[in-house]
Amino acid sequence: MKPVCVLGNGQLGRMLRQAGEPLGIAVYPVGLDAEPEAVPYQNSVITAEIERWPETALTRELAIHNNFVNRDIFPRLADRLTQKQLLDRLHLATAPWQLLANSSQWPQVFANLGELAIVKRRVGGYDGRGQWRLRPGQENQLPADAYGECIVEQGINFSGEVSLVGARGHDGKSVFYPLTHNLHEEGILRASVALPQPNPALQQQAEQMLSAVLDELNYVGVMAMECFIVGERLLINELAPRVHNSGHWTQNGASISQFELHLRAILDLPLPTPVVNTPSVMINLIGTALNPQWLALPLVHLHWYEKEVREGRKLGHLNLNDPNAASLQHTLHALAPLLPSEYQSGLAWAQQRLN
Image 1 (tube, rainbow, N blue to C red):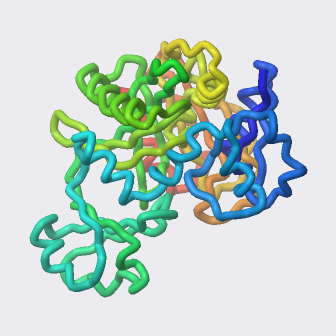
Image 2: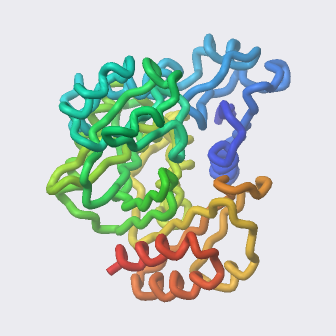
Image 3: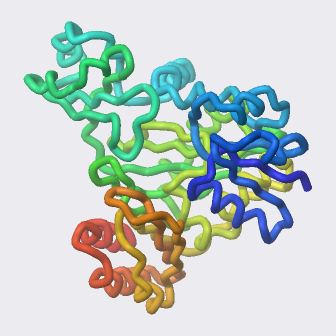
């Protein structure tokens, strides 16, 4: 099988490499500043763990590589403006939005979108960065350089957040995991819960929405779609053209992980629907040093990224899965004393989702 080069050498590239090893697929995560001659890209299939990248000697070479899968799709989805325009053209529901070009628009923005405006940088913002929640009178909190570089959305009163992770092959066939329920705090994913039998109406709705995007773009590989639940329908929040944090539970909770599924798709290998038989929980480890006592709990799978510990940094995650939801709840309860206070709301939320 052809080797795979991953543009970006963070934790997603690392986990793609780990997923390739049992299949005999050589996966090379590469830094953006790597010298082209040091990267075996000529006869490789190219993918990426990030949506946007600066121009470097390496990225200039890859930009003309015939085997860079989805190469022209990344910049289109990395810009929230062009991403929203795509969703509008496909008549897929999102929060009402508009481009925020200058400060004189604020009266019209609040009149059209309501009293809570969510401002997001068109490119680059993630994990709560580059985003602002503004009400009338708070407009001066937005940096002057944001105008023209941001979109503004209506603040949505939603009952829950879910994501759908799916993959499309070269033959146009798509497969999906069950919907994942997510808890975000301050814009950062804290915990995810996936159940083997999701709400069938929401699952069908999500699959139809993501299928429309995948087919329109002729996309190949894994894509994630984050949504708000509003009543009986879904509103698309964002698309991620790559493996995704909310799909990490698949490493231990599905017959094929999202990382293996992505490699299968881009290499044109068989792409069966992954089998999910048990509930799963994923807890993000953010700014917290490694605690070996987590491993004393038999249902806990630790995935550590070997990064320097810094506040707000994703350093790893814990996956838990078991056929018995009560056993998962018991383990989450036992895990609580082993994690700092900021994790407690996420652990309690996950226990409640398992009811």
